[in-house]
Image (cartoon, rainbow, N blue to C red):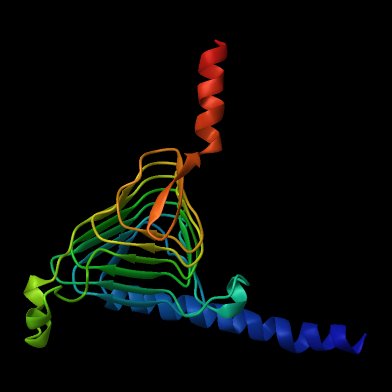
Length: 213
């Protein structure tokens, strides 16, 4: 009885207050960082974003940053960095938990994309490959290539999507994978480096339907 009273008088109002604070915080943050959005994203915990280029968010996008927002075991908040003259586009109904997105050229993420905890999406090597270039900090010699992630893609927890990768619609990336090359539609890939495992179930069902017609 006492616990219920405490919950009603203290815990629920505190949660509502925190939720209202986070909404206001993120609204000001996105405005300050010049982020364009069709609908205010749902941010559970604080989103960290640095936008020096162009950032466009669609509708019904979720960013889980707080540990309690996804019990898969988040290691950090959601972080997004868009460099100058770069463009990040995230389409409708996509969700992220503790994601790291670093956009040096271009990253496009489709609709209904699901990212497991602690996924990293990086379109750059961050540093030059030649050691002498690294000594001189010649960032202009860093390799960067666009990333495209199609609709209905599922990326398992702790996976890394690297520069130049294109992932086709409805494909699945197994947890802990390092994706270094492009993946066609309707396929399951996993491993380090990620390799083909099998066709996705949706594609199999479609093929069976075509055969039976």
